[in-house]
Length: 607
Image (cartoon, rainbow, N blue to C red):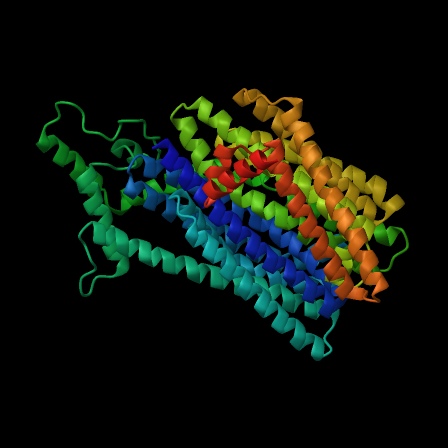
């Protein structure tokens, strides 16, 4: 049973991780035409307004889905079908309400926000991107529901569909508006409308999966929709049938009437020993005949629970968006104070943000994997399986620390050719190198925050976030006037690492997690160093050969970057095999991992 659960978790993690990489690759590709077609000015304006959108959207795209996922997983573990539907109903109501309020606020307050930023060119793009908040929240809530059901495929397909539509619409509007000679702010506003189109596509996918899920539940209950019966009526009939079979509701009747919610304890929904069949039927009838008053009370109760859990998670999930918002509100103004004009400061801000999409690729993978950890950690905590919590936490921290540190090292040494390959020139290469270092601390911070939230310690990541944001603000004020955009990049790397270390220290204290210096520092540093060395050697060799052949520019940078990445990946894989940084058992748990583990053992024997 445990092996099956672990395999299912890892398969889900693999599916979500793959979808995250693919969708973020699409999102990264989006930045290339945005900068190449619109220029650094459009890129800077778009990045500035998008930071406000991502800051607001964290609640409905990360925090609320995490809460929905947690409670759906708990209700599912108790075979409470009605409870899972009530969680989703409450989650959708909360998400849609929050999205509407945030969209209106962003639209109406756009003039004030543009003054805070210090650029009037951001007004129209701010209003354009606010429209996405009308469709993204229900999409994200449904993703949380399916993740709580341990179904990763709906979220994966929705993520990819959202990104494809977003980028397609954005590129089409970029080309159209640029050809028409539109101003930078109008081009940026057109690009921002891609988020609305992507949200519509992602929501459509989730609705299709929900339709299939509702039909499957109706079929299992023997209630295929009859002629004239709506899907909603069929779903409600399915709930009633399931309730009659299981004698299970998610709430105590008396508590529901008073508007409260009771957490179900093991065995609480079972019929008490000696209870008569007539008494059982009366109890079931009371739970099913509560009518709208009982349903509304249950929905209110679940909304309260979701908010209690989601608000601290929202604060704890703000690491990257809040630091981005700090940059948005400080860097352009600090650059203007150093002598740059309005549009020039926006261009410099765009150059500074060139490295952000590459780091976000790593963050997106870490976030997707961490989101999947929440139900598993919550389940282990509910069952009192402390050893399982410590084991899962140790594996997650080690894997994602290896991922983040190695990605930081590889991107730092390849910053020059990657910059030219993607953005046509080498402006801001030093800033890109410093930005690359953010991947290490940011990845570790994401997974440690997710583990703490899964254990119920939702306030600690929020506190660490505030420390990180305050440090980022102070370092920006200190370093940007001296180092320009490189100072902003360096301050971000330091802030991420401080928040991550605070989270890991608390996690070690709560779980009793122990890790020697070899496993925690020496092995990861060795792997990252070997990866960076291999990538750097390939960069020098390939660069020299291409220079001798007279091949430079973006084509030469592309070949150099590909060679460096390939060399780094091979070095990383070889180091994993021979240092045993990942055990054969952990490798075997991955999809297709049994063959990889066998190959690793054979390679070690042969050498």
